[in-house]
Image (cartoon, rainbow, N blue to C red; front, side, top):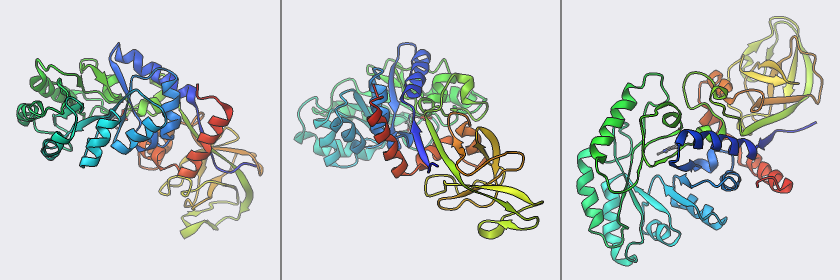
Length: 371
Ligand SMILES: *Cc1c(COP(=O)(O)O)cnc(C)c1O
């Protein structure tokens, strides 16, 4: 019998990188590895992708960049939230991290601290808001921001220019096209590097262009689009969450299962108890009917998800204690479970418990299969 276990497949990560590379057609690929490698483990993912000669990594914070450097990764590192303090600026310089500037306060910080930094030591990207209206400078602020950065001796010449798409995952490309147009009008004759694409735009928007791309979810085998399936894009799941049945019981007709009695047995029925719950990262909001595999066969959860157990409708499935259960991964697309639970694959991946993630890393290291 097995408890909840997370399996990370380095070969799947490398395969998905190959898919991204093919779509990137020669552009530089920064693998998005923020949020602990989308829940797969930052260093597990970095090791797998480094062994496939990844060009660089995109992280949210300088601390994540430091973790990559400490593990010996010397590829380019793009820090998407940039530096928020002088300590983080120092870290960017000493560990060669490239910082994004998405707010004028970050330029104030750089100007204020520039004299303490060596000349031409800080690599900077300007983020332009082309329509997402989350982080990024309005297009008309870019020329002034660039001039201020150029006046700082510490800032390396050839500042980069990037943007982020709000709706590249939708079938209708019109808003993404608008964002591309706005980017072009700001970036015409830009003398530094440019970068626009997340996974969805990399696969779906051939005209987006840019010198580099920043795929995330596709590397992990999640579907970047709100329609269809990851497999249609030749993406393989990098994460599989498994466990086993630790009990099989009969629930009499009319009796309710679990906390709150959410599911009432319409007939006397066999119910399996699987050793996984929200403490492991299984979504607590998963409703009755959320798919789960028992012995490779499709079943559905019934009753509320507990901290370390879920209950499964075993009608039509002959199952015994000890039989294997897959929550998502190799044989059950994570996107399907996410949809049933009213969320997206990104969130399910990020919510896997740190303990399972650590165990997955230890397993890979023991097998020596990162390379
Ligand atoms: C997370 C992130 C990405 C990757 O997005 P996916 O949808 O996972 O491909 C790219 N760019 C930025 C700025 C991001 O924050």
